[in-house]
Length: 403
Image (tube, rainbow, N blue to C red; front, side):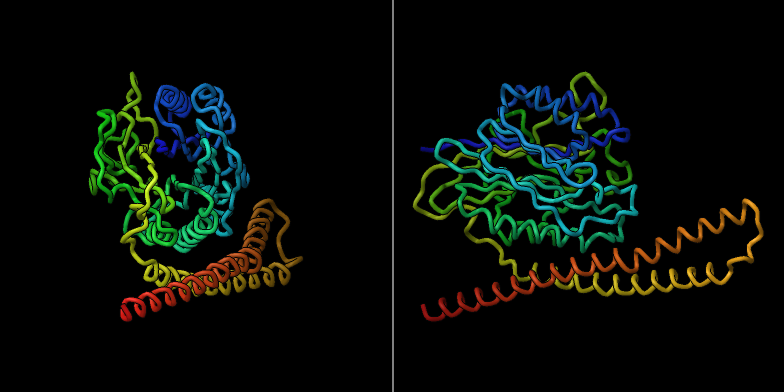
C-alpha cells in the first residue's frame, strides 16, 4: 500500500510588536492552510501563543492534530500541524543559542532547538522534525560556531531517532543554504535527501519551482540591498527527508506554493517564502532514492571541528579580557570609596561603572565558561563522529579492494 505526503514549511515572522502586518498575515496563513492539500505543516517564528491557538482553532477541521514546542522565555516559535494522530513529541534544546545580552537578536530568549513529532498514519510511522537555526545577522557571523553545533546536534538527534520511522522529514529555517557547513552537516550525517537535487515535476500550476526563500525579489519585505546583490534570494528554508530502504519515494511536487502577495493586500505572507514537498511512498525491495550516492560527511565534520576550535580560542581570549576589565573596575571602585563628590552625576557614573563591572565579571566567569563547556561537548561528539566515519571509509575501501 502506497501513501502520499504533502508537507509545508514557513518561517512566519511572528514577533509581537515588531513584525509588520503580523495579525493580517497570520490570518492569511490560516486561510491558505485551511483549504490547502497539505497534510503536515511545520511553522517557525510563531512567537505568540495566541497566534498558535488561533491557527489551531482555524485548522481544527483539516489539520486536527497539532503541537507547540514550549521553550525558553518566549517559546521556541516552532509548531507542527498534522492531519493524522501525533502519538509522541520531544524537544531537544541546544546548549548554544546566542547571547543573553544580544537582546535585539533574541535567539537566546527563544530557547531554540529541534522538535520531533512522531505521527501515526495507518500502520506507518512518520517522524517530523521542525527546527530553526540561529541567524547570521552580520557578515562577520559571530554565531557561526553556535549554528554549526546546532546543525551537528540536530543531525545527531535525527540519526539517533529516525530508525523506527518509515520516513523522516526535517523541515524549517536552517539559516543555511546548500554548500554551507551547517546544511552539509544536517543533510550528510543522517543522509537526508534534498528534493531540489532530485528529479521531479511541478504538476500543480499553483506551485512554482523551488527558489530563494529569503530576501528574494518577489517578497515585499526583502531588503533592497540584498535583492540587488542576489535577486533570486538565498534558499535557506528546506524540507529534507530520509526513508527506510524498503520504501520507494516518488517526488511529485516541490517548490514555493504561496503567491507573492496576500490576496487583496500589498504585502507577502511573511519575510520568507514558503516551501512545500509532495511525495508518494511505495513498497520497494531496492534502495531508497535518498540513501544512494550521498556525500560522505567526513569533510563536513573536519570543517566543523576547525570552526569550533577557532571559536574556543576566541572565547578564551574574550574571557581574559572580560575578567581583566571587571577586575580593574572592581579595584577602582573599591579604591575610590569616600573620594566621590556627593552629587547626582557622580552617583550615575558610579552606578554605570558598577553595572559594567558586574557585567564583565559575569561574562568572563559564568557565561564564557558555559559557552566553553558547550563547545567542548560539541567537539567531543564531532571527534567521535570523525573516528566513526574514518573507520567506515577504511572498511569500505578494504571491501572494494578485496572485491
